Length: 284
Image (cartoon, rainbow, N blue to C red; front, side):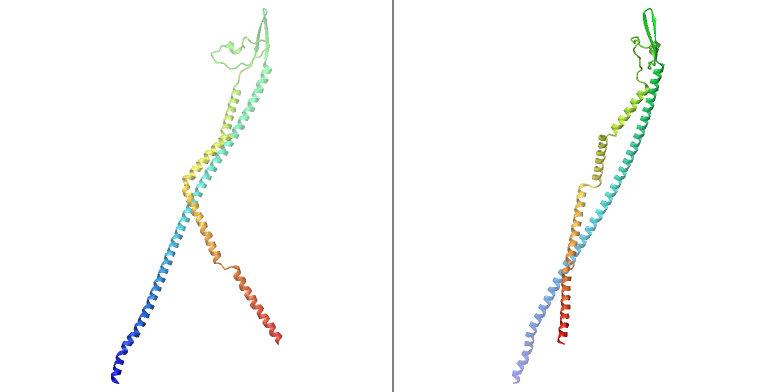
């Protein structure tokens, strides 16, 4: 009996070893699964962190783009302010020129009135002082008249200065040529015509066109068309991102139907409670 018991005692550690082997394998499998799960979780966390970093970089880029757009807009506002200031100066100058033109017109009109008065006085003097004397000598008429004579050069003789031409008859009249007043009037009218031509519609349109071309050149120098397109595209992107954010917020917000369902459930529970109370009263 002792011999049989001895091998049984020797076999016990071998059996314990066999039983411990699957337990160790199970523990190893569990540890391996835990490690794999932890690796997956670490990978997910790394991907989330990378995505967060990308989002932060994009936000920084967007902020930088917005800052550049704001700077460009400020520059544009300054340029528009400068152009407005120059336009106001040009308008002030045109107003001054128009006021000077009005003053010149008033002066010319006054001069014309004074010239007319002088002409009227001259005509009256001529009418009063004009007379003729006819002298008869040996059957030959010698007409002579006293009238105002035009200015002549010093080379001409005294006879040409004080006597009319020989071809003049007794019935004809001798008139003077243009005086200084008429010449002054003509020169004033020519100046008025020149001023009118300078400030005509065609010239004003030409000046406006030239001014518009200069303004367009300044705009193109300040902001190139490529830069304008970039600004416009960035603005459209910002608008699209804003619309997406609004949509996401509207989708995440609870709808009115959920509130309606809760209200209906409350009303049903209240009605059922009232019915139960009424039935209890009836049974009583």
